[in-house]
Amino acid sequence: MRREFFKKLGLATLAITMSAQTLSANPQEWPKEVNFGVIPVAGATSMKDTFGGLTTYLEKTLGVKVNLQTAGDYTGVISAMQHNHVQIAYFGPKSYVEAQKRAKAQAVAVEVGEETGLPGYYGMILTKKGSGLKTLEDIKGKKWAFTSSQSTSGTLVPTVMFSKKDINPQEYFSKVLYSGGHEASILSVKAGKVDAASTNNLDFNRGLGRNWEKDDFNIIWESVLIPGSPMTVRSDLPESFKMAVMGAFLSYNDKEGLAKLKLKGFAPAKDSDYDSVRELIKLKKELKKKQ
Image (cartoon, rainbow, N blue to C red; front, side, top):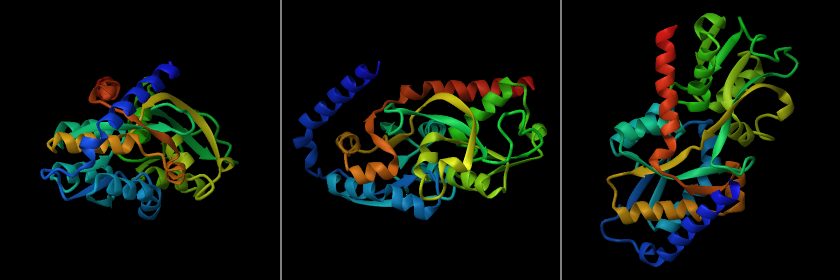
């Protein structure tokens, strides 16, 4: 299965390389400047450090000015693309589904995790090491943190899991809050501000050695593989520009930049890759009606 994945990745990269001569020029219909919006999985400073190298590479490769833009919440990036304040954007799977529906987002590339080597990641629930909280039963009556209502691993996936176990978070926990981002959730657990929080292995790994250590936490639950977070462009941009953006992501191989992103690289992406996320959203609504 993995061999087939990399075969497809190689063929896609070859196709991009073959058309590089036609895409390397800057056609007149291309925008002269674009904004690259990223969902706030971490604080603004961390986001700029993590995505700075990739932004510089996009600018150099595309031959247009690329401005990195962070937002206070996931919805802010969706709205920015909807109103054409952002032309390229990094979304989570759920926020992409929403952006595709109302902000003309088109998936062109997907993250390939450094840890898994696959275009996907795992949701997980953390508690603080030494807290004695090691199971879902242990965190009953404790303080809980989701990330954002638009987050896949931070809200959608654990909510579906809770619903399947007949757990109503508002009743199960003594307090439920939304941290706004994965870094904020993880740091809140580390500081003891909340007892447990949902996040994912990719964003957890991005903060290792910088904001926390693995031994600071208990990992008490992990999800099945979730489709990776996509890089997107507005669908109404020139086709040659969208292909060039895709080619830029697929060819990104800067070791230092990828190390900060905790990625092996990027693979081609298409909208149907996120149909399973749409099914999760549908399932969440159906489960909520039954409660």
